[in-house]
Picture (cartoon, rainbow, N blue to C red):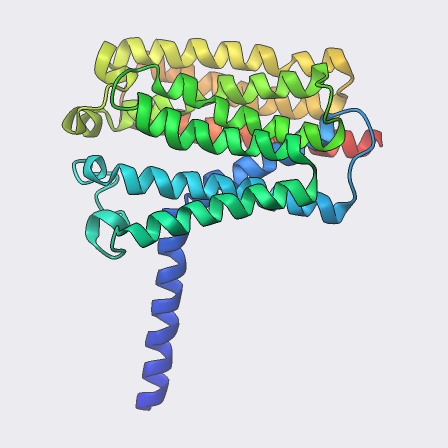
Length: 303
């Protein structure tokens, strides 16, 4: 192989590695889920939806703003991340990215760009909800609550709720109806069992970092019961949209994903260990994805 080919392969590998690092830094998977929540908010809200081009702008804005909040979280928590096995390879901890003020400026610019896209794609009300979602995660959760109280992730769950409301406001900016409000409640209730499952799996990490996540405060068994109770409440609320016009396709998605989550969370209460905790964590991701996709598909089917 020639030196030029070797250099090209090395450059491609480095580029791919850099893309992966950026995806991790900006927590792109979470950002895409938040963007999907905004799209679901548009889909379930009665009224005339915006044109596709404006929907794309709004969803992109919500996703970018969420990504900025995720990067801000890593920037501000690099001292905690260094003490946790799960996070000690993050870019600001390892020094792959130098945590200088230029990164803080870039994160703020990205957040403002996302908010601007929300204005252009929808309206000022959607942009306010978009900004509130990022503020809730970046400031309320990360700076104010995470190091102080186990209520951190309960309040932090509002970040996803604001994404739904941002989508709803693109359709009816001056009025919130029952369906988008119910889906906002679903996102709020989904967050604690999702993150508490992860916290059970990595409780030793949170102990080492002195972060009062629920399993650290009350123990794995009590936290597992809280996860299961939260899952039961969550699934009950996911059935409410059928009372406000959602159809069979949505109901099928809610039952399918909800049943799987309930099964896994029940197994977690019976054996609160890393394996069952991660199974519940993954089940919560599947449940939310199925629910949002079913809501979007059901709304499209009903026209």
